[in-house]
Image (cartoon, rainbow, N blue to C red; front, side):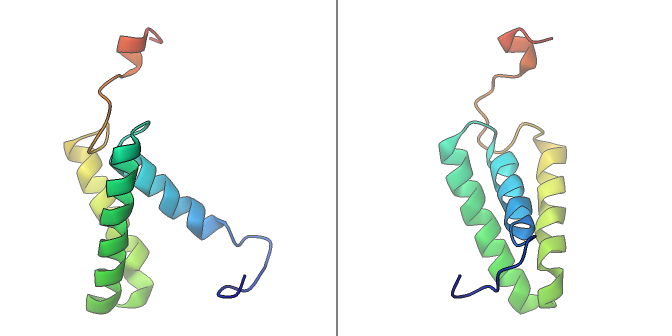
Length: 88
């Protein structure tokens, strides 16, 4: 832990970012997770420069919600929903 100090809830910020990356890219798609991480990384870096650094999370959550409104299964989803697998 050379960059961050160690405390019991250190993983919560990383869990939120990883959740956004996986769902944004599409559940189950490694290609989507890669590009979701790339998109969130660039957005987080640029929004920290353009806006207040404390608003970085808000900016990528707004983008996350906008993408989910347009494409609920993620950008690079595999296209298999619960109906196709037989879970509903």
